[in-house]
Length: 300
Figure 1 (cartoon, rainbow, N blue to C red):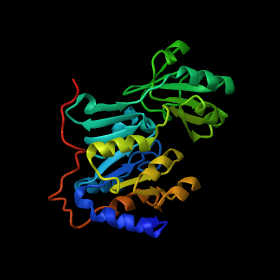
Figure 2 (cartoon, one colour):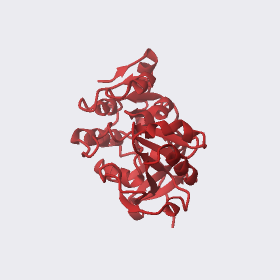
Figure 3 (cartoon, rainbow, N blue to C red):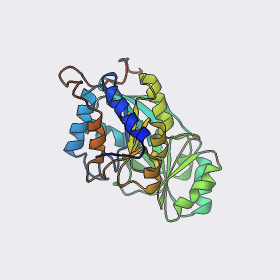
Figure 4 (cartoon, rainbow, N blue to C red):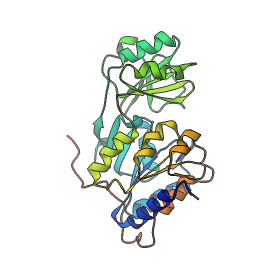
């Protein structure tokens, strides 16, 4: 069950359920929300996502993962049309089975990574660096654990790390968390993923900024938005949504910021939220999956 934190949150939930026939935009974090790291999406979650889409809702995956790591999750969930937000908001893609690779890039935000890498190394000399390549993997200073990053890896000299602007840099090493404030002064967005891991993306960027673009493009009212997450990189997304829900195992800072706290991963907390959006008035026989807007040809 979900636990509303205020009466306003309860009212918001009721309004969202009442609007089911018009479609709600449901933003879902992946790791820790839909699946455990290194594991598959449980069948009960797949079924709940499918039911929400049959009810006419727009289910949007919003993840710190790169696009190459999000696509298999979308396929597992049966989402072959719609939108995904990846790399903490740096990349937005429109899913379309008719497009090469099953997607079309919609928005790509990049930045000059050389100052970031140089500053990181000056403060944490042994820091490990990965620079994202959309749809493929990472250029790296040394190989990361394949279970820790999605896609392929290519070890390169420094000049190739920063030869072109990139969507995201990952920094890993003991003491990496203390890089956050020094890097922010460079005009980028550093997000601590763990004590030894920091993701860096362009200025003024988050899952929320990308989701707002998707919301406006799809044409869903701001009052008909839901977001579920479990990490610090979900703070802005939770605040953006009309109904922001934290997983029960989320850190206190996220639970305190949310409108509601649902069950933990083991309690299938995200399933409870999805089921709350499905009403008897919307029949699986009459309502197909939300497509995420009018179909359009892939860019050629």
